Amino acid sequence: MKNKIAELRKERKISQTDLADAVFVSRQTITSIEIGKYNASLELAYKIAKYFGLTIEEVFDFSEVEVKYND
Image (tube, rainbow, N blue to C red):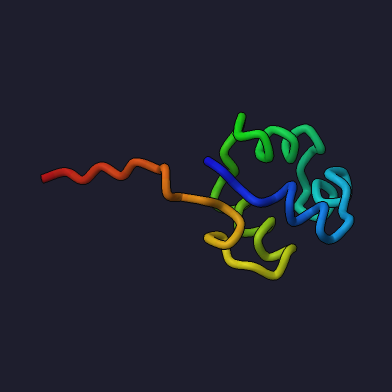
């Protein structure tokens, strides 16, 4: 899943460590989310979005997420 975390951090001059500390995860977790290696849990996505004063949809791009419905 794509996201704007790195872009938002750079705009606001926030390090990965600063963001990680603010949302109670490791710097490695932030790195993994930024490069798309790991998808944030709903709770973590909410915390990150709230930290930047945005909605989850403004931070995370769900356009490539496949949704399957049972008929």
